[in-house]
Image (cartoon, rainbow, N blue to C red; front, side, top):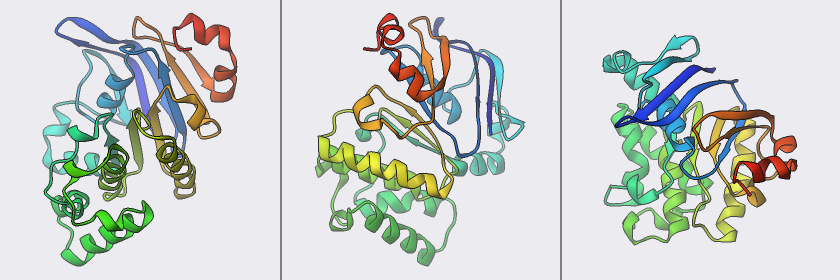
Length: 241
């Protein structure tokens, strides 16, 4: 589904990704692992069309994605409907006056009628256990509640691909357990999940594969998640544990 080939990205001349090549299949659960600043968040932004490579190419279902292609409004609308991005900081993602409007925003922008929008919102309020929050302002919620609302807003467009940036960061153990079980339940719907994380205790058994980023913004190892996590000497060498 996603094919990255020799991708390099820099910010004001400083490297953020260096010669990254990675293939992600439909329905695959991939964990991105690495120390802070190694490039995990940049890769998620790249996949979501928020940054673009200095060199190399990336394709979605064989179609090369570029800044020029995303200027085509019809293509951009289709692209952004297929990929949902959960930011590490929920405050950067929530902006509507109520939880209901937050979840409804994406479907409304896609031109769905009121009945379909309401159906999606109600389904997600129930699915994530946040029905009691629908009339509240997102900025008055707890960190865990905000994360659930942000996830509901992403899922409202029913994306094929979920890109999650440290989704358990700053959450209490109960909410972490909830998100773990929720990610496992999504497998049944065939979603593709790409997740930057260092919270290994709560994602054990969730991800099939992992890609490990080095401090110099390269992928130094990829393969079965369980095997990589079991290699403590390797993880220590990469400043991950």
